[in-house]
Image (cartoon, rainbow, N blue to C red; front, side, top):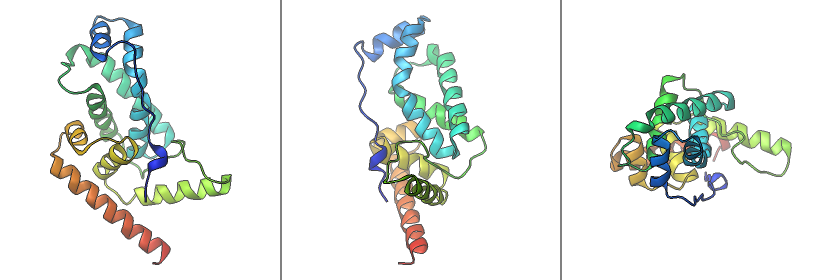
Length: 183
């Protein structure tokens, strides 16, 4: 099962992230907006994959952004901003009740509405067989295109742990597909 259709588009800014960070730390609202806005889709998709429904994901994404704004003065810039935001989002989602995963409204496009409903239901059922860490690793790699090292840094685990979780996730999805399709 591949999630290539959920890959995010690349984003760019005219001011460097470091300049925006400096201005944001000084409390400039426009700098805060320009710094965080490009990361909103990533945060939402991760929250959606972990929590399983749009409403909870929207709430968690908003809570993540508010926590990030409050913590900006403490952000040293040693890690990438996206890595730091993912860590905050994951912590926010972990505090909430995890539900089976669904990537509803995350860019799914199929032939008709009936097919879309069926595809979403199948995806939700498949991802429900994964642990929260497996879903996080899978979304960050397959959807966001992050490297193993970036995922490991963001989730505060080793690269080997990420590789293992991705392997287990793929095996679990393959077992699910085999059992659900009777192959």
